[in-house]
Length: 285
Ligand SMILES: C[S@@+](CC[C@H](N)C(=O)[O-])C[C@H]1O[C@@H](n2cnc3c(N)ncnc32)[C@H](O)[C@@H]1O
Image (tube, rainbow, N blue to C red; front, side, top):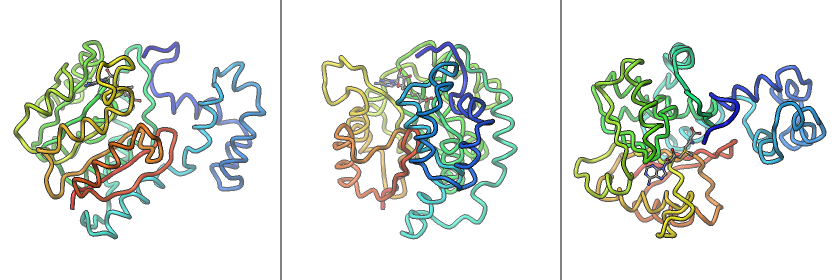
């Protein structure tokens, strides 16, 4: 997954759009997502100079105008259902932490589709749940899991990062050491399913962000179907209060059916929010 442009796609998109009036109007609530989308599709500079394709544009159009909306909606739902406690300031320290991470993260030659709302949601969910045992399946070069690390490290916890790609694991290791999280992370360049099946220690927070190989001999592990399979593999490690963070959550996507069924089977309640990627948070009750 190497692109001409490295780093955060979201920041690149924001830079490209920053001087467009229709973007300013969308951000200030003057136009809705459909109007924002139509304006972008009509703007030839986006496909010509910026290199956006139609899929990028349709997904950018559902990016929330305020990056607090997904966390407030999803975590608010969990609070209302008493699945998590109320936390007055779930974003405490976030702005400083964001500056620190963005200023120090080495993206190598890779691009990430972790958006500002994803950063904020994982930070806030971690502040609320205060997990000591985190497992990230499909951790790539760590740029999603890092938003959990301030709280995990403060609580003396341990986060397992699992990815089958050695190059991204090495880049994650370099970053986590540099950021001072080396003692709170175990980087495993292995199949998440094997690690989960062999693990005995319970998990407080499971982060699902793997994309299975399209030619995996086991159809249930292909693409995003892997989420359902991984949740089954982790079922013996999850208990009341365990939180499941799902990147690319699209509950109506047929590839997510096993995941949705399995969440019900383990008595997990939660909510999702449509964003560039889709976000979901569930807690076992
Ligand atoms: C597409 S990336 C996630 C990118 C992330 N959403 C972002 O934008 O930064 C998915 C990762 O899952 C990893 N992966 C695929 N199958 C896996 C498995 N069985 N166990 C662990 N990681 C896996 C891939 O190597 C890849 O790095």
